[in-house]
Image (cartoon, helix red, strand yellow):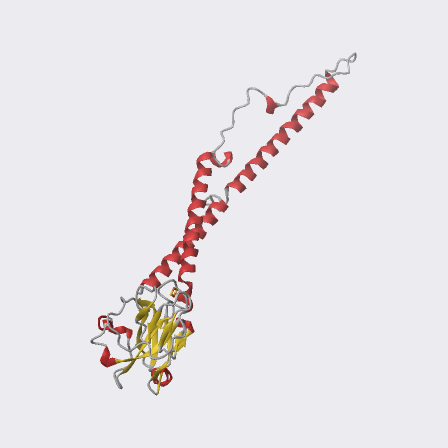
Length: 291
Ligand code: FES
């Protein structure tokens, strides 16, 4: 199971926990018979009201009887005994925690649960947002650039390098003579070249992002290189640093050839290399595009 799959599973579990937590907090505690605190309180209140109504009715009957038998004919005021429910001798009713409602401890418990649930939900959503491009298969994932055969025909014409832009990979595909590899700084990272086993011409994928401040670096066919329009950094046709404020060569991606003969650019694997001490291809070979 890949790390990405494991992380997605963790996100799903976190989201489920968050949703369950929030639902539980929102519903309150439910007893074994399926009733919630609110239902129990409602029943208790109805029961108390019913008993109070009965008591009042009994008192009213008693008062009516007293009024007809004991009333002083000279007085219009009847002496009415207080209903039994107001008697001082009435026993105190014990109120359970459920009947009492939300205690302070329960309130803080629920608040803590809600905060935890929201945190987990936020964590899950943030993780999902972070991984969304990879799930969709965009930049950051392996991207097919076309068949090696077709790419070679496009990027090298009559000895002239014509870099091919692959927008989805933010890359320039360029040719690279395999015989140069061992004596170059790319010998330590041979996976940046692929497809050269048969005819000695491999393919590289340069990230088109300038390593100075990130401007997109266009190709310059006359000079046979790449020239940044922002601050004038220049790189040769292999993306090796030549001039300007850029601190290193253009970055490049790991590449491979799949079973269908297509060049696959691993845009999740970026390879950085230091300024070349020695070019693997002459530069410039003509006039610059950026002064
Ligand atoms: S961003 Fe390219 S030279 Fe500054």
